[in-house]
Image (tube, rainbow, N blue to C red):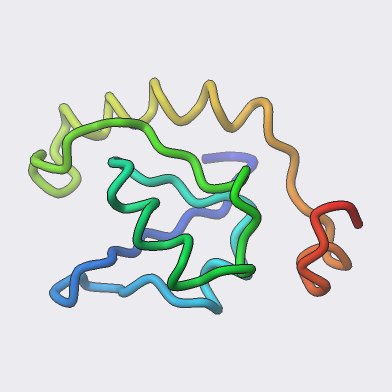
Length: 100
């Protein structure tokens, strides 16, 4: 995506890349398919990313990984939400202060 650097990570132990505090602190936004994913991230990584930057798409997590149907759905749903989010600046990301 032209304006965004994108990384994929999961919350299950069998994920190719596990979500980490470092990854969330790097991110401007985290996108979760289901609310239960967001419910895992918030308490486990409290403060790594402001709550308003953890988006939930309400897509059942039962699609084939990177399957064409899922990719098309993600593009439609995520692009509209990303347009209203501006990247955090480096001082805000370092301080963890959403008001910075």
